[in-house]
View 1 (cartoon, rainbow, N blue to C red):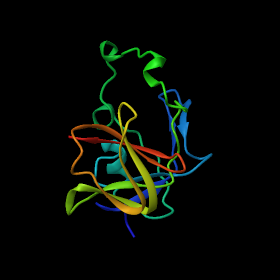
View 2: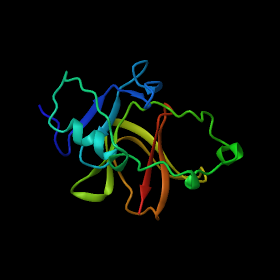
View 3: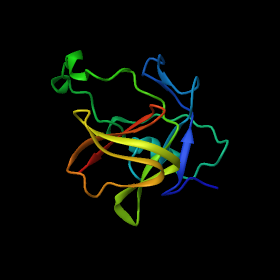
View 4: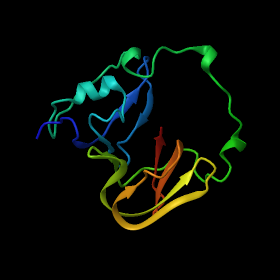
Length: 161
């Protein structure tokens, strides 16, 4: 099966900088899951993965305009570590579940497996929770940034506009 729009895909990656130095890799853990065509990864990488099949290997160089844009020193912001109080692991968690929008219902998030989850706002306050579900109604959430956290501690960030 070829990768196409609305395909749930997972892949291992190794990210290097222009000098060939290792920046990040998934090889030590779980592959990165995403929903193809939903703008969950940078455009240049998503375009390179389009049409690929299980077992394909590729090397991709993403130009800035298809990634995060050109580096702009004036846009760099220093953030105090205290802004992340209450977060145990600043390096983030590997996710074992995938959350993706329901194309037939914009106010619903689907999961690739049955999960027990808690939804927290940016202040860490619980705004919703559900046990052993494969989808979650988010139509009642106000605009903002939220975290979906499984009972195992895996976390996915999402934005409601």
